[in-house]
Length: 332
Image (cartoon, rainbow, N blue to C red; front, side, top):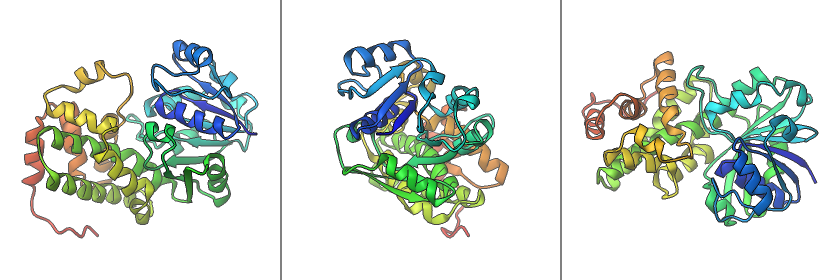
């Protein structure tokens, strides 16, 4: 039995907590919302973010993050990307050196443009860090659907440690040493999923979806290589695997956001009626800013950002993409 703290009780954090509890681990689940703490402990359900899923009795929800991490061997970090720094920045004294921390957040800070690995390196430099990513809808993991993901760390021992923490007969975990590539792929595929949802909401067909997926992957890879990632990572589970799932799957929050935008909702209207975060929105800002910083062309990401935050009409964004100067597909 391993003592684990899961920080963040959204649908994915709760799903991972339940996965680990069913493996036999003792899990403390930290939730920001007091009502989530109360319902998890009382009725064994997170009715706010994961309704209808019975939770293991080995999960104990708490509202104090320092209490959650006290004495645990593994920390799983799953808040939205904009909240991670605020959750962990005061935990230094409560987290012993060498503690394994696995980030399951797929996003980039919009103000600093930092990946989650960089946030943890700044706030908790004494830990062993790994990033968990890949094609994994929470609802299907809860159903026991066979799922394959990747755990990335800068050394093999840490990657394998994270691998062992999560692996079950139906949740297969591969190891990887490319933290930057895995984190970027997991974050930026959400932006391409918003674009795919926009195309679907406009009534466009399979041809434009295939083009968006393929050219979106090219953008992600270009930026990743410029930041030091291994290009092969983007052909793997965190790259192409997660991209295909999120752009085509009906359970994708980011795809659903894109559909709503194409049907006339503003981002503010959509956000007002949805509690769960569609990470692709803020990531479009961060991705566009990274592209500008590194002088990397990211036309799809830039157009999604313009629709979300610049008032550009979805049909106008599609026209802009199709009317760009003709180029070679080979970007090297």
